[in-house]
Image (cartoon, rainbow, N blue to C red; front, side):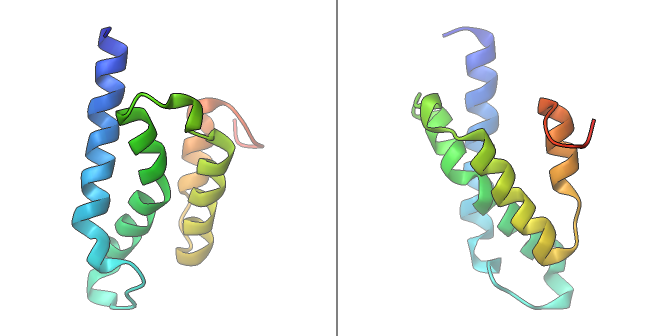
Length: 95
């Protein structure tokens, strides 16, 4: 396994662990834990892709679907994650 693959797996494992740690905040409307709630939803949006990377099934990581799920987080919470992710991969209208 080359360094790039190792780096991707480490980051994917971190996203997956965050999703597990934050799962209790999914669907919460508590203003005091708004940051945790948004973080939980963002991690949840990406955890299946992270698991695919961890398991070496990168062909199962649908980039367009991941961006669409991130967009749902933006719409629900008024965030702007999508444009930052799109800039990383140079798609969409944000460049």
